[in-house]
Image 1 (cartoon, rainbow, N blue to C red):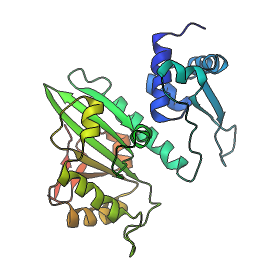
Image 2 (image 1 turned 180 degrees about the vertical axis):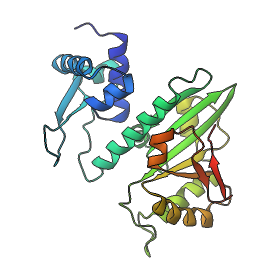
Image 3 (image 1 turned 120 degrees about the vertical axis):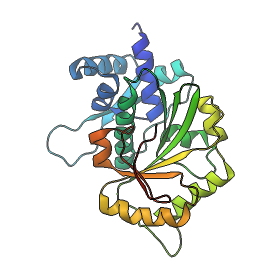
Image 4 (image 1 turned 90 degrees about the horizontal axis):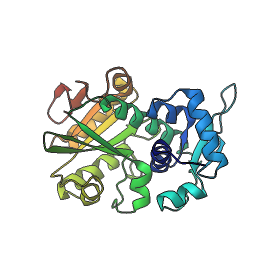
Length: 257
């Protein structure tokens, strides 16, 4: 099978996200669904991608999930890693959808260079000092660069816990410590940029949840580097719109550009 430049890019993107559905792949590349499925079948038959049915309780056929095959891993020079089909799988897929939306928001911006870094790569690099966001991206414009980390709250975690074990407050505190110590060398190396600081973009499912988390942010973020918005606003307007709220400063309708 002859591998095209687009095939190379497709295999690379699937590897970066660990796994993707055909719908996610077609959206990312702007491909017709039938054309995308036909190409995926060929890459699967040739051993560049593996696939399996996604567990689903919804009616209809379950979607296929694609991940690296033996030839794909060899092509990229990386080990094969199977998707983590655990209790975090749904959250990971939601984060993939969010990052694709962010990518598409900047795809047509001629003056801005956008580069994303999914959670899978951050986790597998094992240089995160225990603070693993749900994703990251960089923006470059007019010789200026900015680093953004992403957290998506699907309302599956408690806000505060007496034991400070995997609650929203402890997660925010870890990001604050990371900001204070400027522990972003891994991101500077990956994006090939000497970032001075970063911003944390926190996305919630609803305005009610945003209000609850913003109180925690205002309590701990004295530097004003954490911005919040809701998923409906993000999907409607795009990540680069004036949809962000800074609890530490009280500023509303901010843009990240």
